[in-house]
Image (cartoon, rainbow, N blue to C red; front, side, top):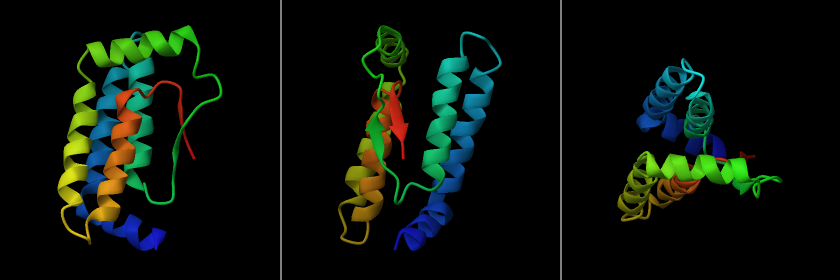
Length: 122
């Protein structure tokens, strides 16, 4: 089922979302200041490509002050809109029974994109 879900996700827009995350991530990595943010966006892209069967968990060292500072900057600079977008798409997908698995994947992406620093993808 994971393979079928990933194939459907890939065909129905997962590839486009992943490419957009990767493009913006590479653009952020051009400057030294943007590298941490670019790496998070590249992480989003890899997760957005094949989300079924993967989990988002807090990392071992989530409590560091650097992670807290970067997460505050992430939210203050407006990247919380990615989380809001995925939450809305998750709600829209959950309207139908067939869309519930896709909605759950959007909720995972929303959780990852709300405060991405210190999160781990398995």
